[in-house]
Picture (tube, rainbow, N blue to C red):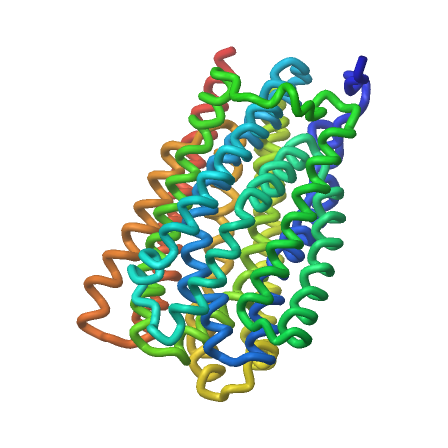
Amino acid sequence: MNETKSPTVKNAITEGVIWKQLLIFFFPILLGTFFQQIYNTADAIVVGRFVGKEALACVGGSTAQIINLIVGFFVGLSSGATVVLAQYYGAKDKNNVERAMHTAAAFAIIGGLIITVLGIVLTPQMLALLNTPKNLMEGSALYLRIYFAGALFVFIYNIGSGLLRAVGDSKRPLYFLIICCCLNIVLDLVLVVGAHMGVAGVAIGTFISQGVSAILIVITLMRTRDMYQLHPRKIHLHGNIFKSLLKIGLPAGFESVLYTISNMIIQASLNSFGTDTVAAWTAYGKMDSLFWMVLSAFGISITTFVGQNFGAKKYDRMRKSVRVCLGLAIAVSLILTVFFLFLGHYVFMLFTTDAGVIDIGMGILRIMVPGYTIYVFIEILAGALRGTGDVIIPMTITCGGICVLRVIWIFIAMPMRPQISTIIYSYPISWVITAILFICYYTFRQRQRMKKEKEN
């Protein structure tokens, strides 16, 4: 008989000092996200420095947008499993924790296989839709197809690590990523610099590394003696749990798709400016990912904190954790803003020595970076609402304020002023409007909840 977690064991998320526990939980997620980003960033650095700017554009640009679109949808869906598990775990509901775990495992397998087939088959059509330059088509298609061949590994790792974080374990996913990131860098150097395999080399290195990370996460879930232990024979979709997963995850999945579609439209517009612009956008994207991985770590942290405290019915603690998380995220975003504005030129030189590419990239950076702090409110408040299962209105706000508005801006403003800066301004403008809407909605929902608490 397996041991289960004793109800007398202190759960730091529902009982510890909030700011300390947030940071204790946040830093492993941040470092884990950092090493996950290094998978593709290492690819970009290696091919950019040892192969050329065309290879750099092949592993970024259109390929990055396509990967974000397809994988992002299923990762968004998997967030439903994370929230459901966090709530059951906070409530110490062993039976439903077990059912949620095995439903999520079944979903990871099914989703990964679907993405593998669709990704490999539809790669040429997707690249063509994004107006990918002809000189980048062959390399981009090769990179994408090898990446999609390992989609199952990506899904298993991301869903498995999400489940571990849902129960408060953010350290082991970090350890596995460090191991596999180092492996990926070694493989990139061996296959590209040593074996001269170019774009195929970095893709194969990523494929192998992600396979190792998936194996490690599965072994961990199978060996745990806590109530969320994974038993392969029990893996299947439990109807009611799967419905709850979809209820929370589908809006997040569609939000991710619409968000990425808007970025793909922007990518298609940027592609019309040529290879230098695509390379500059790719390099900036790797720098920009530093901010997004920090903010994503805060978002994951607050979703877990709110989810577990919501399940434990500790509503005051839930609200306080949101305020603390907002303060921490704003402070970090300001630090990153100053760092990029003053040292961005030198960071660009890690990716390319082409002066034209660097000049274009710095123009993009000066428009984007000042808006980082504004986006904090969107990520943290959306994550907090998701932790309570409130996903429909946040999805509507995000899709309308960011996705739709951004697309409208491109179609109206670009014909009037066909410049790179016109495209980039769509980001900070949409962030301001969406942040205001989230602040209003979150305040409204909290007043509703406090009113119900007083009535009860």
